[in-house]
Amino acid sequence: MTDLDLRRLEPQPSPSGEPLVAPSATEPDDMVLARLPDRNESYYTLVWRRFRRSVSGMTGLVLVTLLIVMAVFADFFAPMHPRATDTPFAPPDMISFTAPDGSFSLIPHVYPIGETGEFDPVTFQPLTGPILDDPTPVGFFVKGYEYRLFGIIPTNRHFFGSTDGRPIHLLGTDKFGRDILSRGIYGSRISLLIAFAVVTITTTVGTLIGITSGYLGGTVDNVVQRFVDFVLAFPQLPLYLALTSLVPLTAPSNVFIAFVIAVLAALGWAQLSREVRSKTLALARIDYVRAAIAVGSSDLRIITRHILPNVLSHIIVAVTLAIPTVVLLESFLGFLGFAVKPPLISWGLMLQDTNTFSVIGSYPWILSPVVFVLITVFAFNALGDGLRDAVDPY
Image 1 (cartoon, rainbow, N blue to C red):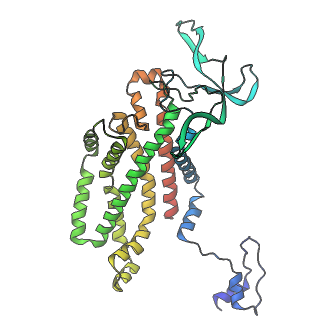
Image 2 (tube, one colour):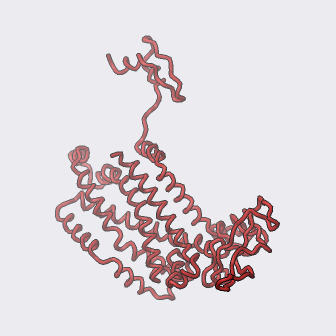
Image 3 (cartoon, helix red, strand yellow):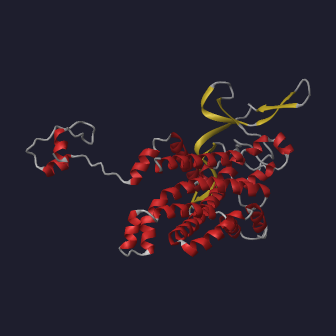
């Protein structure tokens, strides 16, 4: 009895989930095959099916999408101009759904934090708290400072802000009175741009060198791997500090960003190339690769059609895990003053205001840019962890 005869004996489920009537023995074979559901799924379809079952992976995907959207439309999401000044070291405003008369209000109000006019009975220090006399109503899609969407379309609409044009500072202000939330939203552009650019360069270079070295082998592999060993053994932090200090402060912004990207990418490709090489060495011994060599396929065809698609899943996971590493490195170098320079804005540059303990103790909201870094690192790590489990069932 053939497989087709066995299928005829069992009712086949329909695509909608309802059982089908068992075919009769006299029904033609082509009609039976036409009624069978199409269950041919590609590899990436199976990966997506496993990935969407991961709670952490889907959470990371949502957060990464929101971060990218926030970076692209930073002008729209920032409630204040990033260089507009107000009261220095102003504490974060309080959001409340309570109206000034104490009743519940559907429209949220922002109450600034300041001196209430009362004094501590023990220390006689002025007490601070929300000033309830003159709240600022908050709305969505309000008018604010003018900007150009995508650098082309002039507009002044913002996702949220005060409806009466007064400044609001949900995360407080820095030492120059600039809104920390707006600067953090704008800083996502530079930080994520550097991360994506560095990872793109390191992934491309590391993949090409790793596959070429592992596939060719012999003397080429030996020479390339000794150079990779040298790059991996080189102390990275002194090189970063030395190279970034060579850029003059008067250099244009685009030149400075390009130089920072080149410095970070100079030593970041070696680890991925070593991982890709190890996978290429294993794939080069598989039967279908040897069969392609036997029939006379070129090395370029074997690498691009047989080896690269099989290491692509590992590369995708490596990319999602490398992006938070670059974000942390840029924040660290920016805190030390060796990343981007003003008037550019990045999360690392914003953390320079926290270089003294007295500032942190008196104005703890200055550490708010750390929240952006934490969310970004968590989002990409969760996404990479979910992809790793999805692309590798073992």
